[in-house]
Structure formats: C-alpha cells, structure tokens
Image 1 (cartoon, protein in one colour):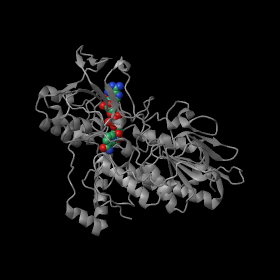
Image 2 (tube, helix red, strand yellow):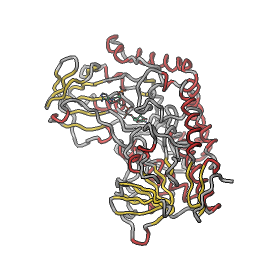
Image 3 (cartoon, rainbow, N blue to C red):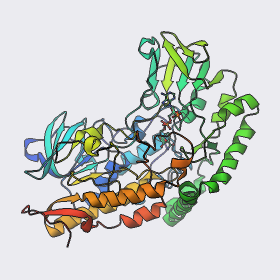
Image 4 (cartoon, rainbow, N blue to C red):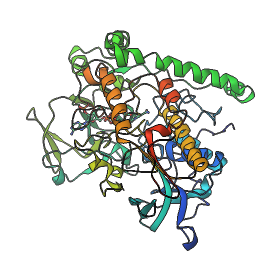
Length: 523
Ligand code: NAP
C-alpha cells in the first residue's frame, strides 16, 4: 500500500488517528492475545504486522491522546529527521508525498497517523492508557497489566515504549530557585514567546543543533552551554520536485530504488564505525572542512572542534547551526554552570549572566528507561533489576530470561548510529510474528529465552563492540550505560540483523505447551 501524506505544518498532523478509538476496556474484553505498549513506529508497526498475520485480538495502550511516539512529543522549532524520509518510513508503506529529502517532524507524525488509519489499527488503540505495571503471572501464564484505567491481561506483551521518550534533566546547583521559564526540547512551550528574551540553552546534541538556529533570530541573547562539541557534517536536504513525486506515485519502484541507495550508502559507514575507526578519517575531514567554511573566527572554531573520534557520538547533520553561532547575539560557553539563581546563571568562569528562560537540550533517559522498572518477570524483579550488574541484556534486543512472552522493541543493542531504526523495528517484527506463528502451530503457552542463549549472544555483541568507535573513540555518550557497557548499538551491518531475525529460533528458548509441561528445546 502506498501512503499519501500531504505536507503539514511544522507543528504536526491533524491528530485524527485517535478519533474513533475506545478509551476503556469493557468487562468482556479484559484478556487479549497481545497487548502492545506505545504507538510510535514500533507499536504501530507491531499492530499492523499482527493484523497482517491474522492476529486480531490486539490492544494497543498509548498514554497520550494521539499516535506518534517521539514524532508526536518532539515538536520543538526546527525538528526534522536526520535520516532521509524515503528510508525513515515503513518498507510496506512508502509515501510519495514527502515534501523534502529529510522530512520535518510534522510530516512524519502525519505519516504515522495516516498509516495507523489506513492499515486499520485505530480501533485497537486505547488512548490515555498508561501502563503502570505489567507483571507476569506464572500460574495463569499471562501478563497482568495495570493501567490508569484498570487491569487487563494478555498472553503476549510487545513493548514499543521507545528509547527516546523520557526526557533527561540536568542536575544543576540552584536550579529549583530559578524564577523564569524552563522547559525541555521534548516538551516545548510554544505559547512561551522567546522574542527579545535572554535564553540559556543547555546541551548541544541532535535536538539542540536543530532548535538553536530556529530560535536564534528571535531571541534577544542566547547563551549556549556546551559540554562537548559534536561532529557536524552538511545536511543534503532539499525539496522533492513535483516530477520526483509524480514519478514515485506512478512508478513506486523508483522510490524503492532511492530507498535502497540511501540505505546502502549509510551502511558504508559500518566498517569504519565497528571495525576500523581509522576509516572514519574521511567523514572527519568533511566535518572539519564544514566547520572551517562556516566559522571564520578561530577562537569560536576552536571551541566547536570536537576532541573525540567522529562517530563515537552520533554524527550530526546541519547547514545552519554553525552560522547561527556566529551571530552577535550568541555566546558559546564551555566552562559549564556553577550555579543557577532566580534570574541568572553563574558560569564556572565566574560570570553571572541574566537569564529569562532555560531550554534543556539534554537528551533522554535511554539506558534507564522507566518502563524497564515496570515490566516485572516471573521472579518478581523488573527488567532493570534483572541482571546482577544492572546492565540490560536481551536476545537480539528482544527477549529476556524470566520474562516469558515478552518482546522488547528497540531493546538493548538494536540501536543505530548511522541508519534507520525503522529497519531494525521491521526486522524485530519479523521475528516476533514468526514466534507467535510458531506458538500457534505448536500449541505453546509460553516461550522464554534461555539464559545461556542470551549470555552467548551478549558475549558476541560485546566482543564485537570492543573495536568500535563507540567504545574506543574517546567520548562519553548515552550509548554506554553506567557500567560503561555499550547496551545500545548493533555492532554490524543491519542486513545481518535482518537475516538473523528473519525466523524465530525455538532452540534458544524454553517452550511450554499449553498443558504446561516444560521442554527445553524446540525439538
Ligand atoms: P543528546 O544527543 O543526548 O544530547 C544531549 C546534550 O546535552 C549533549 O550535548 C550533552 O552533553 C548535553 N548534556 C546532557 N546533560 C548535561 C548536563 N548535565 N550538563 C550539561 N550538558 C548536558 O540528546 P538529544 O539532542 O535530545 O538527542 C537524543 C537522540 O535523539 C539523538 O542521539 C538521536 O538519536 C535522537 N534525535 C534524532 C533526531 C533526528 O533528526 N532523527 C533529532 C533529534 C534527536 P555531552 O555530549 O557532554 O553529554
């Protein structure tokens, strides 16, 4: 099916996907075959693939009032995707109407709304339903899911809670005394007029480099508190021509070929990122040249020059970030914050700077997501408490011992620094759907990945990550957890992940038939 999403404003789509959904379970529908958590790409993709596989008893729980996940919640000025739109979309739902090669947030949100509607997912969604706890009931072999609207149960839970959904706030001395406005990039206050204000921005990551150029012309003065300068390369963004859109409509193969080309181009980075960081010299030269061309002042350029290997943190794309920092109303501050006062921030350089509004571009809680504390397995422990050392481990980022019939979407080591996460989500969904088919065919009540299978898998992943630029590149990033383990990224080509998750592999699982006599292999 081709999806036709008309370009919409920067602020988002028409919020209609929620229109016909039920808000609460009736007494007769408290148990379901599958409960899906979240309506981002992962949750919506899961619901679509389950329906296509003939599994219709599916309920999708969404804490907000509309679909969209990160693309609903992040609507800061300038918010766009840094993966080209033809690739950052479902393979089964191409959109020939993308306005630009890199779609703005509103179009991606509208795309998800349209896909939700067109693929018949809307009636499955319960909006305003937050999962407070999902606990495995070993006696009944079901998940008991407590929400703010009561309890339901399910044979299977698929968690599409999203890695980038819980804002992280900095702990700064005196922050609670600040009398002005303060908000996170993921909770933008559009009704707050920044015109003429003295604004402090904390953070210089993927979000900040998009909203800083968007607000800089409006604010009176902008103090940019930079802890680590990121590597930034040019953004090859342009509008799609009418001819291209017509071609994509009349000959969908053309859009598929473009998608394939973009995908393969991005995979070219993998050898440098994973095995031979020396290969990253070329992108580093590109980034250095970009900085040199856009920032003439040597002092400012020195401040903006990263001191770690490119790729260690996400490589950012922007054409307007550096130029905005060269404007007379911007100061790039690199000494850090000593103290926040009611109407000012005192830097570690000892200077007190009057401040009306603070904007946090400080990212998300990725390796310690709250949902990880709410999923409780057979031994009464949450996923977060599950491992002795506190590091997350999951088989293909998807299944965890002691958590039968639970599938994590974009779980540990499924993230990417270079390509589209939607590709990984679709790979995981192949695996989950094949698992559910196997359960039906074999009459299984539960599937639970074996501890040794996860250990072997995790050893392989961690070994392969040892040479990667993410582990060796000399930066601190959210890819590494509190133990310094990289629990975030996939250490290879994404087509390898696709191939290895194409089929469910029962031999890695303990399978329990409906009569509940456990067998340890799929044989
Ligand atoms: P981020 O990349 O984690 O950046 C957070 C920034 O805040 C970093 O500069 C960090 O400095 C700084 N910071 C954090 N805590 C701080 C503290 N206590 N004091 C001072 N500075 C602090 O977060 P993000 O920019 O929101 O992006 C998160 C992820 O979202 C990205 O990596 C990307 O995956 C995704 N994203 C994608 C797009 C897209 O176009 N597809 C757009 C935006 C975001 P350090 O570097 O020193 O830690």
